[in-house]
Image 1 (spheres, rainbow, N blue to C red):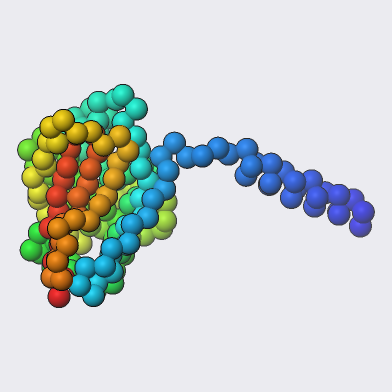
Image 2 (cartoon, one colour):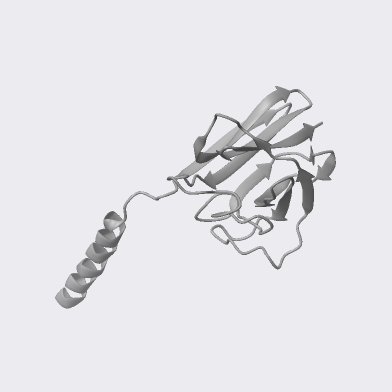
Length: 174
C-alpha cells in the first residue's frame, strides 16, 4: 500500500513538473467576441508575429492553404445565419482557413472538427469566397490580428491584419 502511494506521488509530481516546465506559447492565444445586430461572432485563434521575417509569399506561400493563425485551426462561431461577401453561411462553428494570393485571397469556412486539428486540406469547405487584399503603406502589424470594423445593425467587416497586409471580409446579418 505504501509503495502504491509513493508511486502515485511520483507520477503526480512528474505531471506537474512537465506542465510547469512549459513556457509561454510563441504565438499567444486570442479570443474576440463581436455582436453585430443580434448575431454573436466569436473568433478563437493564435497570433504569430513577424519577428523580422518576410510573411506573405514567403513564410505563408501564395497559393497554399493557410490555417490563418498559428498552433491550431482558427475557430469562428456564428450564433445565427450570416452572409459572407453576400453568400449564405449557416450558424455554427467553423475552421477559418485562407489561401493567400498577391491580388486575391480565398477565404474558406470548414465545419469545425476536433480542437487543435489543423488538417482540413482533404475536406470540402462549407463556403469559400474571394476577396481583395490591401497593402497598408507605412503601417505594419507585428502580431497577426483579427478585428471587426465598420459595424452596422445589418453587418460589418472582419479584417485579417498581419505585416503590411489587410484582408477585409464583408459580413451581413439579419
